[in-house]
Length: 370
Image 1 (cartoon, one colour):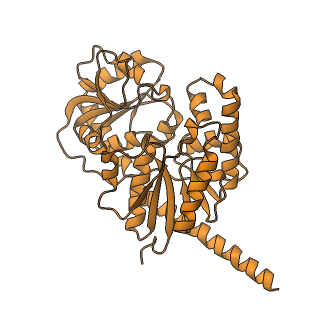
Image 2: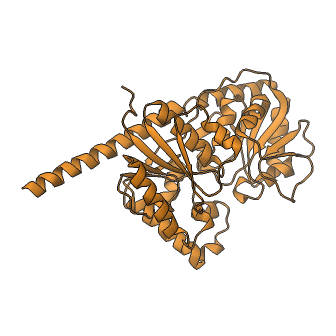
Image 3: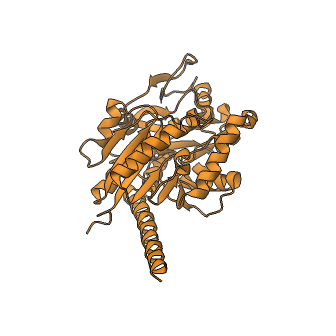
C-alpha cells in the first residue's frame, strides 16, 4: 500500500516566489503516493503557466482572494480568512492541515496542523540590516502572530538548519521544530552548456541582492542574464529577461554554464537547487544557508563585495577544468535534496500527528466512560 493512502491533506500556499514551486512539487508527489491533496491559494491567483505545473496530477486546486500575511500586517483580513478557511475545512474534512504561512496557523483548526516556515519579515530585515521599521505597531502585531503560530501548531518545520536557528533565536518557540530540506525531482544534466551566466531574483527585493551581480557584470567575457520581475532601475551589462514560466526557467538553466545567487538572505533557495540539478556551476553568497547546503559544491563570495564577485566569475569563465568540477559537484549534491526524500519526511510527520490525535481521542473516550 502507498504510504499516503487514506490521508486527506489540505495545504495552503501562495503563488509568489518559490513557495508555489515547493507546494506544487510536494502536493503532486503526495497525491502520487495515494494521498488526497487539496491546494488552497492565498494572495494573487495562479497564472496559466503556474497552473500548468499541476497538469496531469491528482491535486485539487482551490483559489481564494485572501490577503497574504506580509501584505496585511495589521491583520484586517484575518476574520475573512478564518471564515473562508474554516468553511473549507468543514467541507474537505482533512486529516492534516499543512500551512505555508504563519497567520493561518493562529486560526481554530480541527485537524492537526503542520506549519512550514519558508521565510519571515524579521529574519529578512536582520539579514538585510534594515530593521528600523519593525518597531511600527503593525509589524509588532505581525511578530506577535508569528510567535503565536509557532506555539499553536502541532508541528513546525524549516527548510534548513540555518533558518531554523534564526527562527528559534527570534521567536523562542516553546516547542522544538524540525528541519526538512526542500527537494525536487531528479533532472538530466545532459546537454550542451553555453558560455552564459544566469541568475534569478526579484530586482526590488533587497535580500536577493541582484544589484551586486549587475555591478559585477561589466567587463566579463560572458553574457549575464537575470530572470525575475523587473522595474525601472535596470542597469546595463545585464540582459533582463523579466518573469519566466517554470519550464522556460528550466530550459535556461539547462544551457547555462554558471548560476549566481548573491543573496543576503535565503532560507533555502529552490532556484539554486534547480540550477545544481541542471548541472550549473554554482557561485553563491557566503551566507549560513548556502554553506550548510552547498559546502564543497560551490564557489562562495562576500555578497557585499561586487568586485570579488566579478573576479570569481571572470576566473571561472576562463577555467574549463574548475568549472566542470563545480558542475559535477553541484549536480551530485543536488541528489541529496530529492523530492522522494522530502515527501517521505512529510508523510512520516503527518502519520505521527494523526496517530497521536487518535491515541488522545481514544484516551479521552476511555476517561469519559470511566
